Image 1 (cartoon, rainbow, N blue to C red):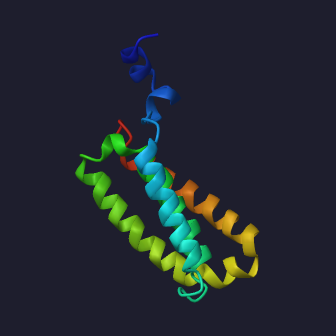
Image 2: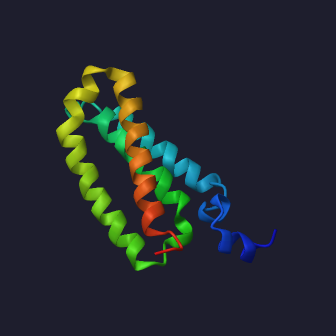
Length: 127
């Protein structure tokens, strides 16, 4: 089936973003930032775990939708979502810290899902 036929049918695969693999320099940067955040958890007064989960929950869809980095609505959405991330970390860090690792994983997964939905809605070809 050609790409035009898939676009007309609105198939799921046409709506998914097929980005490139994350290569060496980006992996090093991400792992360095993750390590620094882990080391600075005490300096962040308990916000480290929640901030780490929120950061990766934002980063995964952000990198996945890099095909749309040249679109203005993508950047507006990213900035608004970053502000919501800060508020979510401040409001929910006590609950996330109470559940320790399970809370961080649950918060990160739910947050990543919601951010992916927001980016998918803004970057959808139907809009």
